[in-house]
Image (cartoon, rainbow, N blue to C red; front, side, top):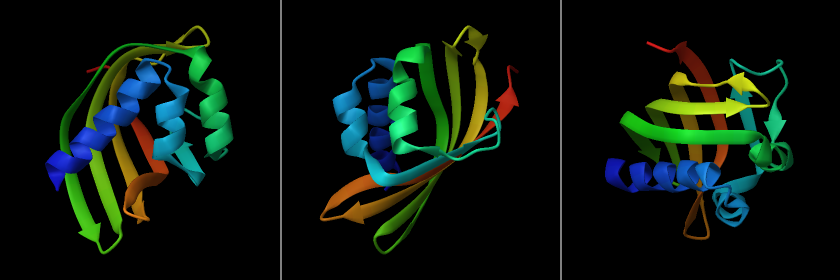
Length: 122
């Protein structure tokens, strides 16, 4: 299962990097929410996440490792992730620990929630 979800995570983040809104729209569930240690304390919706894509410039990204746990039609994916990126003139380069929740809807995995914690530039 780890290979399958690593492929999904890479597909999503590479679509974000390449500003491919069509792929991002397909991967992200309509009721998606993002919680981030870099946010203002508000949950970000799918619409807000998609609208923010043009403001990001991702230079590189990689998943260092992932842990996958599947419970029926739900998967919890913990990932240790690194990116070189900036958003709205701010440096977003660093290491992150992320938790993504994926749900299998009609034989199609979509992410319904992400929590991202910035671990620093280490």
